[in-house]
Amino acid sequence: MTSISVLNARYPRAAKTLGKPVSGVRSVGHQAIFYRDAVFQIPHAMLRYRKDAIRLIAEIGMGTGALAVIGGTVVIVGFMTFSAGTLLAIQGFASLGDIGVEALTGFFAAYINVRIAAPVTAGIALAATIGAGSTAQLGAMRIAEEVDALEVMAIRSMSYLVSTRMVAGVIAIIPLYTIAVLMSFLASRTYTIFINGQSAGVYDHYFATFLRPADLIWSFMQAVTMGIVVMGIHCYHGYMATGGPAGVGEAVGRAVRSSLVAVVVVCLLVSLAVYGTSGNFNLAG
Image (cartoon, rainbow, N blue to C red; front, side, top):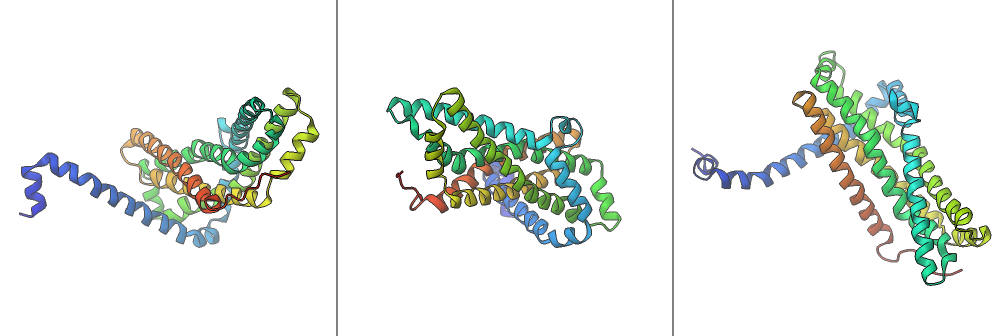
């Protein structure tokens, strides 16, 4: 009898407690292998399943079924970032007005929207829409044995189902995030000028002064990274779903929780890497 078997027999609670970190490490390794295989099969997916990738891009952007009625992910991402931009303008104008510098609300919009508000809000919207939808689709195919049927027909299920979705997510995130950034800018400007009554010239001056093109580029890179991470996490949980319809629901819940944490972690790491040393910020103008 091995030492592990003896430990299980004599101290079952201790064995269960000690086994949790081991199973957690094993799960992380399994996910890493899954992501590696999905990325390595992207060239095959683009060679053999280009039409499916294009179809998935359209589904991600405009949605399918009832989601398509309201415009799909485009409308959801735009509405959420518009709300975030409005909230930023409300808090910024009020807080800066307390110290007599409400003219710097344009600085708030140019600085915080690009670096924090728009990326995090767009990442959450992606996880709640295209991410959850991908998990549900793949999970339903898994429990219906459609994934096994693809393997029987000599179709690479990883390439056909996962790699195409990751490519579609990365391609679709660029126009989606463009809309997100523009909506956040529009919301802040609309509230500050038309509701609070600030001069358009004052707002535009400080906004243009503190809006750095390099920050926009890094913000888009951050959004693309979020798209890759979110699609990878959701595809993994959907592809590995077990336990019938209830198991699919559990997989969606686990994927959403994991992707929300991943979005915040990506934002933190990118911010530390890009702005952690100097901040690329000079208060002038």
